[in-house]
Amino acid sequence: MQPFNIHILGCGSALPTKHHNPSSQIVEIRGKYFMIDCGEGTQTQVRRSKTSFSKLYAVFITHLHGDHVLGLIGMISTFGLQGRTAPLHVYAPEAYGELLQMELRMFCSTLDYPVHFHPIDTTRQEVIYEDRSLTVETIPLHHRMPCAGFLFKEKPGERHINPEMLHFHNVPRSQINNLRAGLDWVNEEGETISNDVLTTPPDPCRAYAYCSDTSYLPHLGQLLRELTPQHRLTLYHESTYGEDMHDKAEKYLHSTAREAALTAKAAEAQQLLLGHYSQRYMDEKILLKEAQEVFPHSSLTDEGMVVQL
Image 1 (cartoon, rainbow, N blue to C red):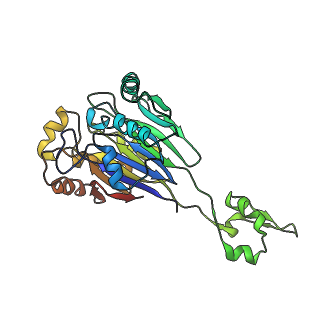
Image 2 (cartoon, rainbow, N blue to C red; image 1 turned 30 degrees about the vertical axis):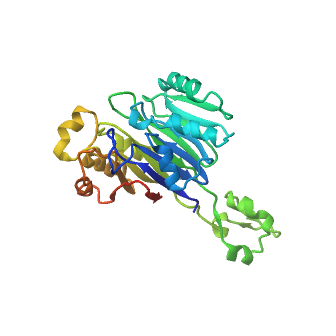
Image 3 (cartoon, rainbow, N blue to C red; image 1 turned 90 degrees about the vertical axis):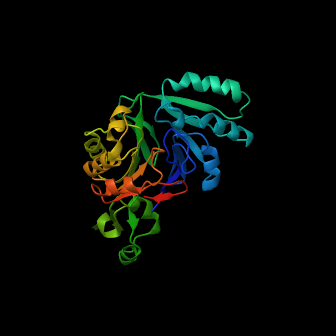
């Protein structure tokens, strides 16, 4: 099975603490690296994680609160100092385009690589990136400013060759690519050997939904389930508060850990990752307990963690 890993670089909320960095993650899938959000200090966290700066293809920004974007221009500058030549793609709400261009002119006017900005519509669920191995879709969220989550969906892989059956039926190696693509084989006697006999199914497809700052959306779980009917879904959902601060969650359009768990349960997710903790919680175990009461397959994220999907 090809790698599909989530590198946690930061899982704190707006106010910095000694325990957590602002929001940022790297999604590693089939040798490609994509960053989601880029709060202050993210580039230092990248170095600590031992992931590769040079392999980072794109950055996806959920919304324009500082704890999700203020680290980006510094990282772009560092890429220039390292001699990067490959383009960097930035997907973010449309309002960031003008500010990004100002930052580039002010701090990064001598870059030897292009930075391509792709505005996203935070009100629509749509595919914004696609290649041979995955798609990335926006997930409309509800926060104090335009905000969207991102859904990374793995495309089906090739079928697996059954060597023993190839040998038994004398299938030439020249047919392997056709068999992996799902084709049957016709032998010299004109007999059709079904692909199901010669191969086994591809690995199950995986999906990762990153739901950043948002109030609780009762329909979100169903939407995610509808978007990933054939995928094993892992959900990251903000869990800024516990039920003791439910009033603050409603006031500031955030979610509690229990509400994150309700979303994971409705989405029929394989696992739930909690994050974006308020600085009020010195011990996030209370958040974990409240989530696991609703959805047992819940876990806390922490800087340096690598989650294998």
